[in-house]
Image (cartoon, rainbow, N blue to C red):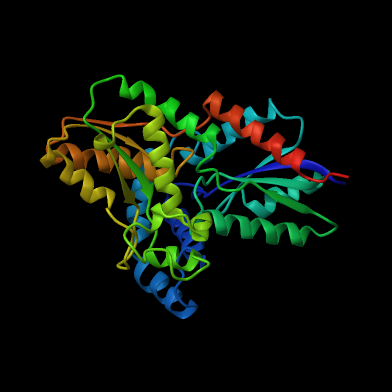
Length: 343
């Protein structure tokens, strides 16, 4: 009963772009204390009095703008990745989403029913963040504990600096660099500043100095900002993008708290005034295209940049089910299996 199996995980999507389904999805997502980390009474008040009465309609409209005949892009792409992995690996493989369906606990139960004793958990979050990687891992651990009978979990660490991941990003970016361009913007999902401080085991390094992410420190193992900057630097260097022709910004902020800067929407509006007319945008925090890449950047972000005077806007697709990326994922699954005691 110690057979290995793979559990690929991502964030999730609503069941449909209807207002009701989006509202249910947002309720689950924003009830997570690792996403909205205010005390429970405050979190519930803000969620039910301020967010859920207003946000579902706008979010439903956004989802509808990218919805496909097969469903939500993130779910459709994730299923394609799982199908491709099944052709490469001789072990059970399931898909689980942190929010919505199919859920991580249900996926672990399916693996158990297939005789799996060790789930090789592969969260598709390259950089560590309490609101993505950490919450998915903790839910998977709890689900494995509930299965009992020795069900074990082997977790893929954040892969922000893994050569296979970086090479895959370079491969997606390279064809666009062959055309004339002025600038490459790496747009990562933003996080509140307090999340960085909470994830700092020392309690005194993150955001304490302007160069905190440049200095070696134990906090870097769980610092989303430092890991994102590491990814951007390595990709830009490997792709041959000059230092003066790339930068990093942070998207998808929510609420009025302090979030890490600069913000992508403000940068997109400001770049044309600096003479940057031909822009390439890459979103390395996302391994599969989703609402944040397709709608927030591909539609609204494009409109912001062109409306501010930009001439050409190129959004680089995420890694999605690219064959080279799937091969990398399969190699990581094999490595996790080999590193696991399966006696």
